Amino acid sequence: MEQYSRRECLEIKDIPSLKQIEGQEDTNKVLVKIGGLMGIKIQNKDISVSHRLPVRKSYQGKVTEPAIIVKFISKDIKELFDRAQKHLKGKTTRNLGYDKEGFIYLNESRTETNCKQN
Image 1 (cartoon, rainbow, N blue to C red):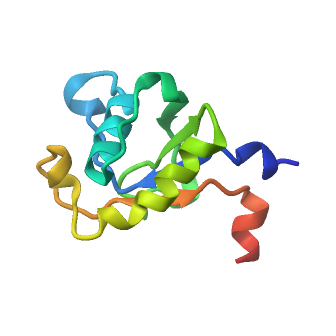
Image 2: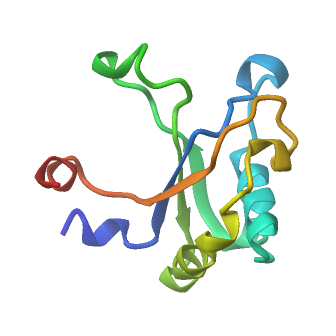
């Protein structure tokens, strides 16, 4: 049931955090930019909620940037992101306007139990 409740969710990793620079970061804007890189026209109304995930103490020092988790308003929009992920090949965070260069990774949001199984 817990995994089923995450069917509209994605985790986006290795996106630099702007919180230190600009105060409160708008993760929805980041998602709109990523959608644009993939050729998807996404709007704020397509996003239920998005925010940075907290970094656990056991991962501090190992994880450079906290992941962004997004819950879309429907599974169809999430699947659209999944299918368009191939368009991110060769694109980096510089294409989003960041100074730091790194690849953009999209992953299905999985429960802690399911992460340990694989």
